Image 1 (tube, rainbow, N blue to C red):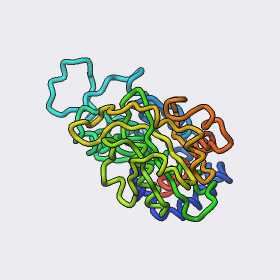
Image 2 (image 1 turned 60 degrees about the vertical axis):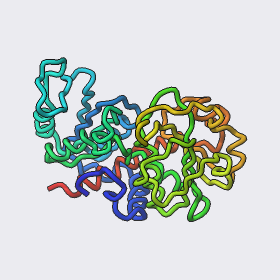
Image 3 (image 1 turned 90 degrees about the vertical axis):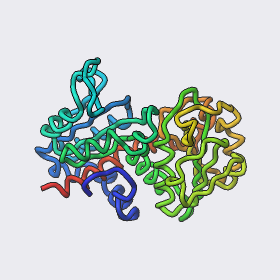
Length: 318
């Protein structure tokens, strides 16, 4: 593995899950692998789980870790080529990336969709500049269109808790006061379909995701019907994808909040969410605090997914 951007980079998912199981059971077995190697984690956006889990994973492998928050303590970066740099951005990303790359062996990048240009977002303008200009392996710590470390952790969690070989997994839209990117839902569906699960996506009309990510999944506009017999419910908000409403909030219908009545429609299903979660908007207190809530073990598995990925990349370094 050179870069980690999509589910395809992970290769065979059964093999990946076996490697993740080994990492979870033997977190310090490969501490020599990263000795005298440095991982640089670059954040264009806020983070709690991604920052801590990826840093912990790299340290478990013996790596030195540098964390850079672009918006706090670093020069603001200009990302457009050909502009006259007379604003508040004194450094260009075209110089910044190769400079940062000279200080490390692996780069992790977190850069959300900006909703200014759908083309820029879905072409992964920022992430791809790091891949093209750094000359180093790049791990997506959530980009404009995908969050692969989260989705791998979700897969690990479902594999640990599933009671049938091919569970029914439902991604459900839920209300949120802000416009959120489609990265987590895109990535989640992509990974669950690749795993061979029965995947259902439910949301109000107008919230259809990019069809490239929902191939192999069933779209159901009736939330109750979608929940029937489900083994896992993954709650998440996202903004509209389709033009002319890209990046907009079209609906704030609280009837889509995931509550116990809806969970009772499932096959004693588990509730999942990537966190942070807006309680009593996305999900009720009763559901997220129930015995069937997996949000904490799911978050803990973020270390496992990151460590598995970093180990694969380290193993390929010369």
